[in-house]
Structure formats: structure tokens, C-alpha cells
View 1: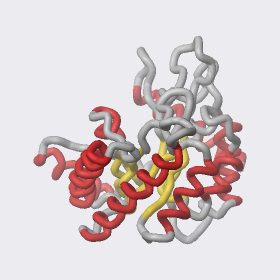
View 2 (view 1 turned 45 degrees about the vertical axis):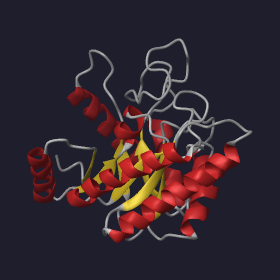
View 3 (view 1 turned 90 degrees about the vertical axis):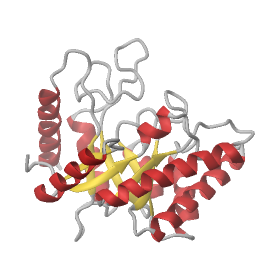
Length: 265
């Protein structure tokens, strides 16, 4: 499908299948992004854990995934922070996250791997991550940029309403460190299906994002200089079918929403 120029993947356990996917992407001229979220969430890893052994376990597992991402030719390696420990230990957790990400950046540079990218998540609704509010994300970007040239941040449109922020508030503090964006949706009414960080399709009842919100997001990305430059950055959908929804129709919905929003911009 020539509508897409990039694909985001995660760990592929079977080495033969892994090689087949790598070769398919090369043949189709698809850029690759690697998402480590399934491993982090599935294994309950925490890159900002206050316990040194727990944080070391998370970093060790992420270096193994970085090896795979480098083999696949990925341009980005996206991770998420651990849970917010609360105001009493937040600064300590922030320092731990900086240390973990610095370690991953150094390792990826050593193996000539992808850029290490931290995704901004919700902080008090679903995943309850440390790296949520845009001001904290901006601090993290500055702290890592002072040490490494292969670190970036990713902002997801679906998380912006969960953080109770606007596109401007979410993007302005991180614009100098922005390495990618996701376009998605979120249900923000607790009593409706898909509530939280579930990435339902655009137009889902009780959800926050549709054509106007996608257009506002794209417009802000243009204004801060993320879009419209010499190099085409990675902008990707993060959407998931709800029970009974055909995945191909879900993809068609997203493509039409993006096309309509881009026409408006």
C-alpha cells in the first residue's frame, strides 16, 4: 500500500521470520521503527525504577531489543518510562530515567543502532507513566540532548487529551527534541467502551479526536517546524480495532481522516 512509507514493528521471536520481515521492508522501500512497549509492559520493566537491580534488569532487556532493532535496520527505538512513583520520589525517578536512557543511547551509538526515543504517555489515567506532562518531557529532552545526539521524544495525539493538554501545550516544550509522532484517538468518558489508552478508531463515541483534532495537531506540527522541512519525519497511526471491527476498515477510516485533515491544513 503506497499510502504508507514506514512501518513500526516489535520483537519477532522467530529468526527466519525476522529476516523475512526485514527483507520485505527493504524490497517495499519501507522505513522501520521499532517499538519496545510490548516487552516493557509484558515483562513489567521499569526504566526509572528506584531499585538499582530492577532498573538494571530493564536496561539489560532493552539492550537485547536494541540489537534486534539494529539488525532490522530500524531508524527509531521507542520506549516508555515506568510508573510515576508520586511527588515524593518523582525527581529521584526522573534522574533514574535519565541514567537508563543515557545508557541505551550510548549502547545504540556503539552498535550503530537506531535513535533512542521516549514516548510521552498519560500520567494519571491508564498507564500512569512518569513521562507524561509536556514540561517534564521537555526537561528530559534537554537533559539527554546535553549528553547524546541520538535521543528524541515521541508525542502521541491519543495521549494529549488524557494529559488534558492541547497540541500547542504538548508540542511546544519538546519541539527541539521531537523525533516522531503518533496519530490516534482516546475515549475520555469512563463509562464507555475503549476508555483510557486503548487507541480506538476516529469517531468512536465518547472519544476526543476526529478530523478537526487531527488537523489542529498537523497544523501545530507545521508551525513548530516538525513538518515541512527537507526530511520527511516518521508520522504513524496508532490505532486498534475494537471487538467486531474489521482491521482493513479501521485502516481505511484512519487514512480518510488523515487525508481530510491534511486537506483542511
